Length: 159
Image 1: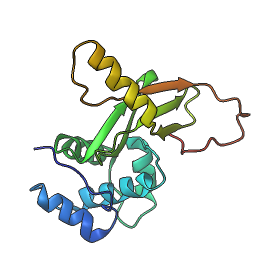
Image 2 (image 1 turned 30 degrees about the horizontal axis):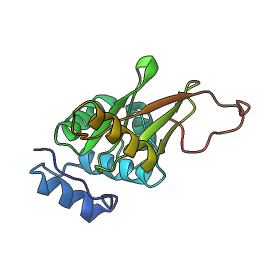
Image 3 (image 1 turned 90 degrees about the vertical axis):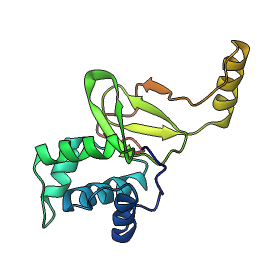
Image 4 (image 1 turned 180 degrees about the horizontal axis):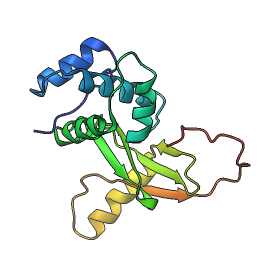
């Protein structure tokens, strides 16, 4: 049932159309969460359920944390949302736009940065072929330590 997601899912109409196309009821919670994740996707940011909760508390229609977790699980099961579990056991969420990208995670928890690198992809294809396999897709997570002072925010958005 997992289908591709248009990057333009930020708008009210496109978020609703996406849910309808996946045969999901366009509930207020689903619409709010898809729109919020789309806004963060535009900045290549990943968010936790708790961050979604805090951001939605500032709106006219806040959602409870349990509702957010249930909604994220439903959206993940239908391929709309992708959950990433990084070291230290915290999950971050992003819209699943089917775009191949990798993650650079700061070990101090300040940021999760996305990056794409065609050279890395070609090398992974070569490695798979050398072992007799057809390359399908990769998910690379690189853990890094920032050399910036803690008071300076890292680029790419905090987790």
